[in-house]
Length: 450
Image (cartoon, rainbow, N blue to C red):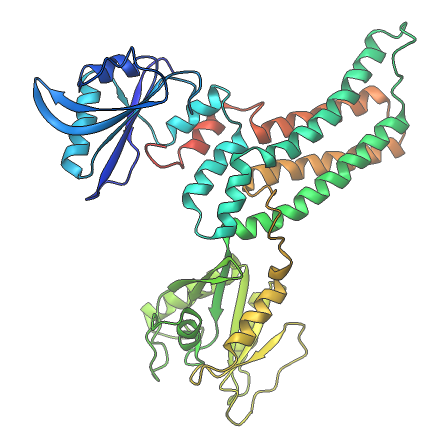
């Protein structure tokens, strides 16, 4: 990390302002080579200066330049941000000059990566930066802010602090048994600590289900046989004519998507091709995709026609759904009923997509199914990344193993090994312990310039 990096931090295009960011020990020296204005080496840190970007006495742009000197910066290195006039040509020209004078083009997420490697933030806070950039709802923004400010990390630090106290006492007991004033760690003390860990981990994991819901939204797939009103339902939910609606069976042959906001949670709506046996090659590909989406979905909206009896194909769809969260939607509920449902545990909502009836009731049923109204407005201290949740689940498994070991009267020094494993896994969550490959993978998902 000895080299100095540069990248455009704003979206390329026509706009009032573009920001080119430079970070590294030579940031001030390199920018000074293309700068006409105050001597940047003499100006106070965290100040803004008016001047020009020049190349061989030719003015490139009139800019405002922000100087931030280490260590009180995002990367803990010297940082300069050049606020130029927006526009592709001007912005690219300034970046080109920086690269010609000694900067290296930053990799995606490299500024945040340097902030992590230099100890400015931990991995949860780093992931929060990316989550904030990609947040589409107010709740997901709040979730990301709590990650960025360290409130989520504090949950993990609290668990590690409890563990380190017990582990260090065990070490002293083993290495210095002659000291009588040292607290003797008993099975009862380990059991008490393990019970605390179990309760806290279960609590965090339970909340993390909500965190994933807020961050990722609910993948909602609309399935059914052709011509039952799937596309009409999608249009009603989206409140726009997104999908083509005709009386011809098989009109929808590919996936049609759209998003709606429900109590601050995104529903990713996916209208699929009607599921039926067909010789049409294109339609059969659509049917295959529909069945695949059932497996991927968080919620299935299974649409049936009130005017028709259930077919063998629809019974097959039920088998494909299994125990996945599902709502049965009986369309054309205003017409004469011929549909007879088998014994099912799924909630049922009658609608008329044509008359826009029952749509609000459907939304309420989705809220009820996912307990959306129970999500606390004031508490967004959740883990939300698959990486951190999977690591915490590994900790949960070890906690259960310790529980079994205590019952089997396993020696304390053997239980200590499991406690250390939990401590190390918790360290991976916040980045106290990490591999280079993990860090590269996480930050490669960031946008360029961040």
